[in-house]
Image 1 (cartoon, rainbow, N blue to C red):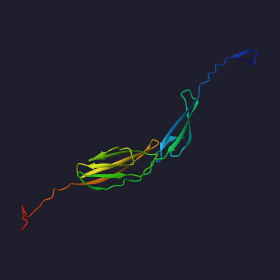
Image 2 (image 1 turned 180 degrees about the horizontal axis):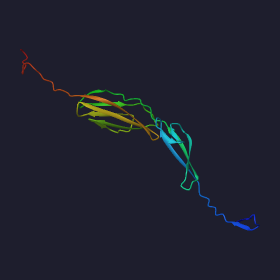
Image 3 (image 1 turned 90 degrees about the horizontal axis):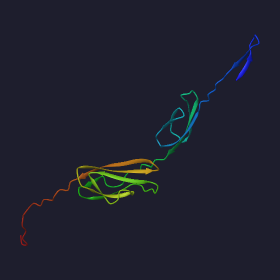
Image 4 (image 1 turned 90 degrees about the vertical axis):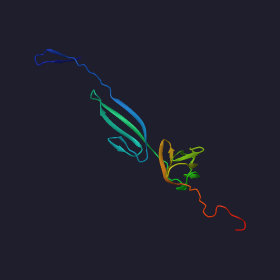
Length: 171
């Protein structure tokens, strides 16, 4: 309550009802992979850091979103070593650069993986088609890259023998 005297000497009473609306502060912990972006601080970000966005709540108060952004490395693209022209029915060895921090996952089209597909090398039996694909996805702390190679699969022709059907020792 507040009182005041008017010009004529009368008391006036003022009653003030004050409502304090809440403001909000929200912290977001997030990451992106190298080469990606994330909208924070009013624009797309590509670097690790702390970014602030101030918004107005429905009650008209400022609310702050604090974004702690981390940019994680992606594995290096080192390609796949191994033959790109193969014979149908043959097994071939393929590999990529070894790194103990990477997780590997191999896949093929028109080939059959022999053994485990989670190391940096493996054997593939080429079984179908004229073209195949081999690819490996390397993951490092939730960021991935995929290398692939197109494989030419050649059919093995049956040999044909021409000439005499029988051979005598004295012919």
